[in-house]
Image (cartoon, rainbow, N blue to C red; front, top):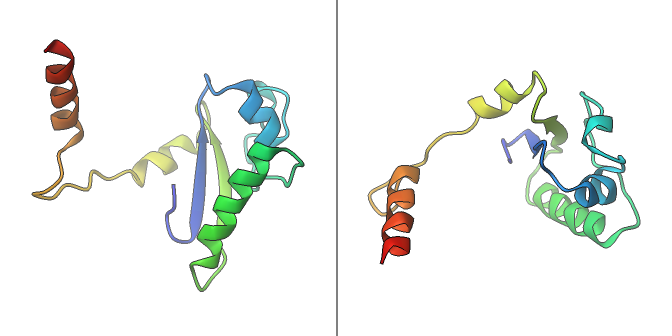
Length: 108
């Protein structure tokens, strides 16, 4: 999530160990530090893609933003969730409308 001055990377309990190892440099979910504030530069294709995306986001702003890795069971999860806002306009559906649409399509 890009919040302007901070990037949040939320890692759920069911996140693949491949992603955790190749992007975060940790062997498994439990070993991710609770206050991880960077994404390490690792020599894996997945790490290079994530780093390229973060670098692209950084290049498109006038100031540097920090990265916070938030685990699903971390206290900082509340900070992340307060930034989640439903952005609804007349041309866009709400999440509930989207789920209803999917259910209708599956039921056909």
